Amino acid sequence: MKWDTLDEEQCSLSRTVAVVGDRWTLLILRECFLRVRRFEAFQSSLQITRHLLSERLKKLVRFGILRRVPYSEAPKRYEYILTQKGLDLYPIIMAMVHWGDTHMGDERGRPLLHEHKTCGKLFDPVMVCSECGEVLHAKQVHVHSGPGRKEAVG
Figure (spheres, helix red, strand yellow):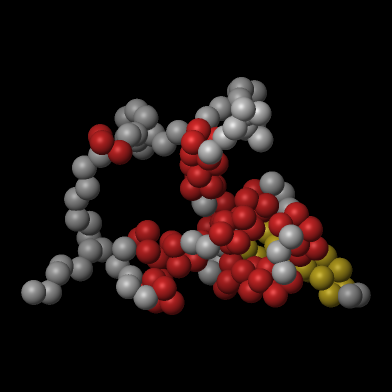
């Protein structure tokens, strides 16, 4: 597998990693979910070079995860807004946050707490079965070939 052709692989994870699989992109997405929208705010928060930030934002726009919306005409400036495709990355980001809270925290505790607006309770993101609602654990899942899988050529 070559890094620059991951988006052409048969594997859904490989195709996803091709788009969001580097540290700067993940941190940009974190900022998007924290409601950061402007180039200068991303740069200030992340302390990333202008070149790297510009490159990652262009990639996220190209893949339809963010859209550029003008907010100033003189000079021309843009905000970066999550599209539905981008918003659909939320469970992935939250799973990583939860893993970090559980396995990479320190004695100070979690840096951010998440409250569900509907019930007003703080929560831990968990993955559940879409059919029965039971919490999923890796050892309780069996994988089958799907219709998009190409058969191995022998």
